[in-house]
Image (cartoon, rainbow, N blue to C red; front, side):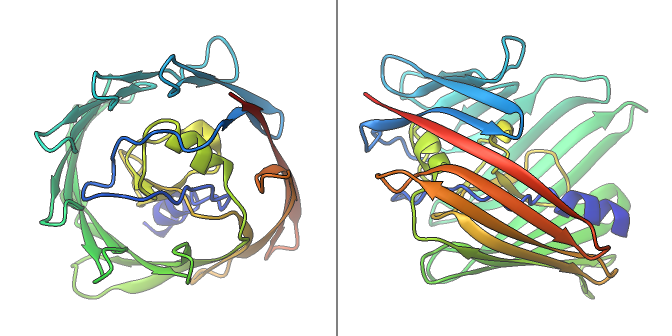
Length: 304
């Protein structure tokens, strides 16, 4: 079980690129793109993605080849109703009520439903799918917030296996997630420490803030998962319909440690343009086994 949790939690690839936009109750408002600068291309190592926009100025497609699905479809209210293979339905308040995905060779009948608290924030999420053995799997996520309406806890229960996971979330003075601590349990009473991440940020603008705002999305936490950004961070140990996080600023260093002895540190070295957006970054990772790796990202922009 630890292996599963470790592998899943490690999808928090700390290249956080979130946006800091004003939010309303539901955290998924439609906004007008605030700048005359927009993202043109972005890359991660050898993969480069081209971004295109519709006549209303919203992102309509992002892809790195003609065969890579990255289309975005909006309804008449400029709400996203399709992002790649995911389809979105909304309740009468304009909040996401259901997300579905088409069947694959591994999973079928994949869907999630959401309910909200009195502040319009996600309170409860149920998920279900049928695996390739014909078994229906169900799980749920519970969300908790502090007095400032900041998300501070996500508890997951994989119902059929009675496995629980809990992420506790802390923030820095600029509203960026500064630490995530992951615990696990078999009874939802006694939780044991599993692993944690800590982050330090710059004070510059993030290109994913720009891209996501040009999709009409305002919140730092979002169910619109643009996985190809390679900067999206997921909260949850199970991959299905996880909440994505986009930080206010760019991560300049991160540390990971765990109770099973592994750890790693990452340092991010950016080059910025005159509008305080990064144009490139070198990410140098060192691991507890003595190895290291280097990754690269670039961004280009255009004026409209």
